[in-house]
Length: 393
Ligand SMILES: Nc1ncnc2c1ncn2[C@@H]1O[C@H](COP(=O)(O)OP(=O)(O)OP(=O)(O)O)[C@@H](O)[C@H]1O
Ligand SMILES: [Mg+2]
Image (cartoon, rainbow, N blue to C red; front, side, top):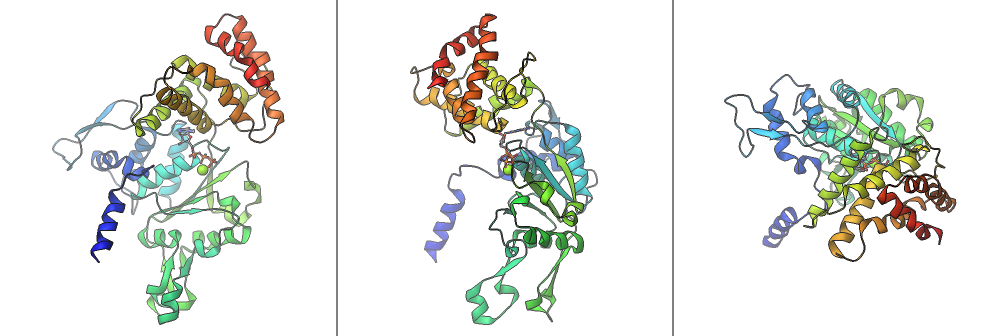
């Protein structure tokens, strides 16, 4: 008994690699709940406006709690950190969808922060982002409905105690948000389980018929946020019935260069802070990195020159991981090689994922845009041009 308790404590206090959004931003969520006392949709922790503020941040401006209001462990003035970079209108529409208890489907290219957005929304709306079903080809209907604890089932037959609820069923009971990641990867017949859940708002448990537990009804506030990746089995293969039950929101790449550079710097710095290292990559290198990603992603350079597009998605998420690697290299191998000299190798690593022909496309980017920038005299681009050999192996 004692051992179990001790193990439990150790498990809850142990360091984690990643905190869920509701833990990472606990103070902000408690602050926003008190900051905006307006009416909330049933089951919501925050007002819809406060949810949008949580997701988008307060733009560096501190917000204040109303006069006379205090919350334990929460400052009375707080800057809400910037999180999702993108259109505010998109986030507002997403929040309205959820307030109407409709399903929300975030679709887009890989690495456009669909999962991050769904996690932030779930944390803000119901205080937990952890009710998640990960869609794969192996996802079964049980994972969307319920299963059984076979030991209990054998010992006492089908009882409410022996029922193992899915995250969906748990969210229904508690009036919370369940996230279904990569919903289009589930087989069509498994996706169809969601159709009845989203229209009837209840799950029948025939094994328990004749008892109160034979039907689980969704409490007010229950909604589903699903994500789907355009590079996988497409959204076009979703059944029409399921499509109709979701409001679609397309999440695109970040439009503005400066905003993307900012995000990459902020995320890479945060990743280095987690390992207690300083992020010391030059702004010029970061800007070159993000510029190269954007040029290759868009098929046209900042200057308007045409660029051959690799088949790999050059996502912001990968730009963040390259920036983090550059930062880590600087922190753990100080004085070895500067960040600029590592950049071509990292870009090659990103580009080479899908199609070996992509390496040639990166080389032709070097022979085009990089060379022209070098010729125009930009120092960093001259340096990158000199490193062309790295790509020509
Ligand atoms: N618009 C954005 N705002 C904030 N962060 C972003 C944005 N785009 C990309 N990122 C970064 O990308 C990371 C990964 O995003 P996430 O995993 O949520 O993408 P995704 O769209 O779910 O990708 P996938 O389709 O591969 O699952 C985020 O943690 C963040 O660092
Ligand atoms: Mg995702």
